[in-house]
Image 1 (cartoon, rainbow, N blue to C red):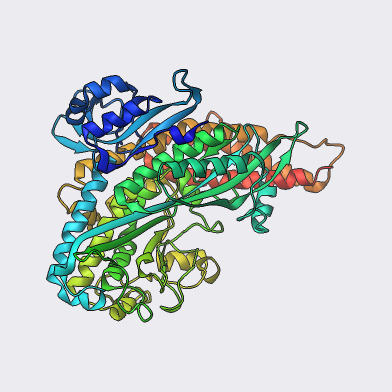
Image 2 (image 1 turned 90 degrees about the horizontal axis):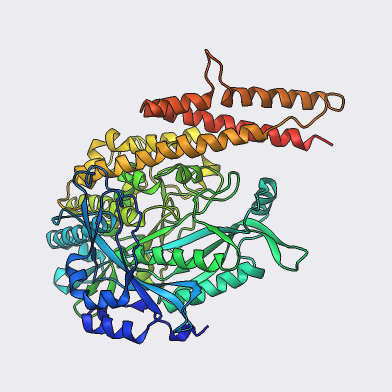
Length: 636
């Protein structure tokens, strides 16, 4: 396949109508154009506009876009059935990518058929821009404007930066990057949890050599992604997985592995757009080689889930062309961060409760955030044992990444997002939280030493910004150093369900103001729209997918021993299993099963009760699984 002849990217600087038409005429393999809007739930639109029609009416598409309606996108409380006009308007400020169907080779070009995907904004009723991309764009603009004003009002901060004054700065730059983890497997293969757990503990897969179709798919993905200009940094095996097996056909037909792909950072909106395209390329490439790809946060219980660590940085371009990192201190071997960096980090930690609903917005996401799997379980940071020794603590929520030889690398790694997190809203909420902390630090004229002391405070100590009864920093393994009770006391209790997570919007009104007090970013209607969308997704999945799947599991746990050939231990285990099965799934006239009670609570919109019962259901299911495994092990 002549990949060198194919068009992959139309960069932002080539978006004049003449340049676009010339490129599309030169590349007849691109047959369609799609305007890609992104709703409040993170779902993108796709439609096929023939290229010739797009070229003919290009200016019209740029001005008026494509019209859809509220039933096509997730915008509750905004675009209802009686108020449903939504337009998809192209964004000319970002790169556009061609999405190829490698399974469809065009007869005229002998190349795969391509669709030019144009990231776009959603506009409701010709007047109001809505959706996730809009929120991130507005958050970026608000951050830049307010930080600029803070720098003007706080000249002391330049004592700690590699610039003399605000007059040296040309532009503030927000950078971001994500790390994509995912599982691949051959279709229909089921996980052997014990094998996966053992392999994970022994580190048998982590950064090991790939083989067979996994190697081919990974290498092809990396090469294609480079054609898009993503500047791939690496692809490798992650901690999860087992060694592939070769079948009688000579092909590897028992694949179950976890992989990671990393690429270069971009500006905030471009980074989120890039991530969407990377996922499409990865999924299509692996599927072409007979492998299923899942971006679920926790596709299999008991083994490593998939994270999407999100890197966040803030820099400035000086008028002389030099780029400086606004998080990095002037004396990088003596200080961890500048006042801006410390303030940003403290803002995330203090306000994380109202960020979390945008990050862990599903049952799947919360299933990953549990102790023992290198996923964060509490609101705590690590910045390093000393300014000369960077932190590599993988047990914290957000870590400081820095290299004393390269100040531009200083950034925060937020470890709680997963591949299905809405990166647009993750970044938008992070910028608003960071801005709150930066504002507090600079208005109080705090220097790095004072801010490090604040960040390192003990629970019970007063602080000018952080909460008195909380601690926020640990350089230790928080799973080993503290019990669950100690973690919750020091660093806050983790929400166990989506309902508990959404309740943070109502339980922390002062923190919620951090998201709502900037005009044009997130207003109350938008927040309510998001809350309703996530609540509906949680309750629908719980009612129509999790409960039926749990019932199927209950039915699969069958009696395997004969009464004439068993031990007292077999009888004991089976009795326990049967009691759990009945409690979970069998109704009586006067006594309903746990699963039925969850459904009734959801049907009655009693979400608090449903949340409590879901937690009990998870505990009982885990007990059933563990007991059944033990039961089967003892049978000859």
